[in-house]
Amino acid sequence: MKAYDYAALNRDFAAKSAQDIVRWAVSEFGQGLAMSTSFGAESAVLLHLATQVKPDLPVLFTDTGFHFQQTLEHKDRLVERLKLNLKVLRPEMPHEEFLAKHGKLYEKDPDACCAANKIAPFEKALSNYQAWISGIRRAQAITRQDSLFVENYRDKLVKVNPLLNWTSKMFWDYAKEHDLPYHPLWEKGYLSIGCSPETCTRPVQAGEDARSGRWAGTGKVECGIHTYLKNEEAAKHAHK
Ligand code: SF4
Image 1 (cartoon, rainbow, N blue to C red):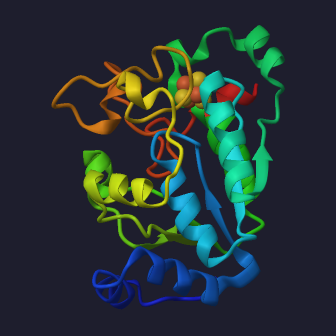
Image 2 (image 1 turned 135 degrees about the vertical axis):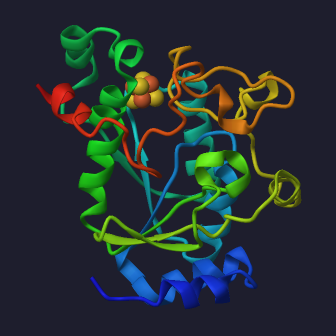
């Protein structure tokens, strides 16, 4: 993996637009670049912005088997509207088999469930690329406040976060300007949308940050893709 001066890049990118950061990633990595999406509440903006720069950018979506039906419909709308080069990733163990074997693992051990159904297929797909664009924003949660515009992702590839400093207002102004569809659950207070079990995603209360409805009450805020799993052993259990 090529060595980058991340400190210098991040100083430079702090004064650049999200489009400029995507352009840098496209020129630096070309066909070695992909982006990820969950087709959640905020996904349409980065999908639009990035594919305006590179229309055939591979879009990685992990179908955990637990998504809301509304998310799958939102996916279909955006794929059609933006002509996305979608790559659907699936867990090694088919969903029905996983349920039969592990039951409601998402309640008993959500780290293990995320490790098997989200992280493993995603990291396997990432091995085909040199760099990855994600849509995380610092304002979404305290776990994201130390993120950088460009980061070394586990010494495996470069992670690029062009929307890092975007506020909710910037996000919604962009969506309105480009007439982008929004996730139907957003209107019902779901500001961050993951899997459908109510222990994994619930609506957010007034004054809470956007990700406080994820795994509420468990202390877990991230699936582990953007941070590190607290329970590194969890993945192993879920594959047994
Ligand atoms: S968000 Fe919930 S259902 Fe989805 S993979 Fe993680 S624990 Fe499992």
